[in-house]
Image (cartoon, rainbow, N blue to C red):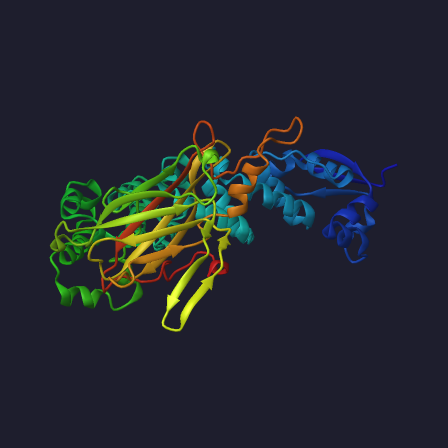
Length: 460
């Protein structure tokens, strides 16, 4: 009883105008508006890419059944079809799938493809999820072959972000150096133009002052440095000026925001700035219990500040905070303060030693999705510790209900497996991991937790 035939990639799909118009606003206009030639025809040829043509049958079947099996192999062409024909419910389904499987996309060499695809189509929710994973798991993504497909403009904007997580700046430089987008068939002249563009657009955002003098010296042996000697020597000189405390030169460079970013630490996971707080046997932890960590970080970023360190005490309250009732004795008299319970995951940072003038505190929360353990959330604060106020409390480090409600209902429902929070990792899914990063900020550092350039305006 079909009254129309769609032809895609040489394959004929008998269909019904009523179903097409009810499912897609584009088909409704195409088939019902007399001004469109297709409205008068019973056989319509649709031009689709090979990837879209290969799954068009599944796409059309969704109109009739409301069901479709999605996987990472067909998600991008399926989203293309949903967008093209304005099938809003399928578009939403694709977007939710992609946001829930970002880690899986990374392991299957598709993260950069998804990211750039979502940006081109204006799907900011997917793009934001990809961008966060890329920033917070940069080294993991850089190991994948898909990293070579990253557009230099996107990569340069990414490198301007303060919340990019890497072991140190030298690691970042090496990852970017190995990024290769040279296509087969390029002439030597085209390769030369491309490489020069890559150096100018991308490498200028590497924060050379955040490298140690020894690491800067290692760069002299790099073939890239030899080839583009003038460019790299200038930036290495800025780094050495920072380490030798040449204030006038540094102030001149830091006059604009881009200059200040050069003297701003990222979220470095090297032992010099970071330590891991791991809570094992999380399900056995009593309500309102704490776990503590003591570690030291360097007081200065530059070599001239020496090896002075500051000791930090970290207290984590993963199952809420309980304030017992007590009597407060003041000059007006005695005041009864009632007990109070906060349903929040709190992390307290206490500065034990003479504090630095100002620091950035970063909390890197680990989660597991699709079997991939990764940094799933980052919380940042810029704070000035003083002798009178040596404490910083950070609440809502991660969702309290998601972390703790699953434990209450851990018996599961019938034959269904028990629900376990994605923030519990390890072989038995019973370990909570949070990396604490504390790095000092110089007077010429950027104080914003994020850089001044955003890839997605909706994140501002």
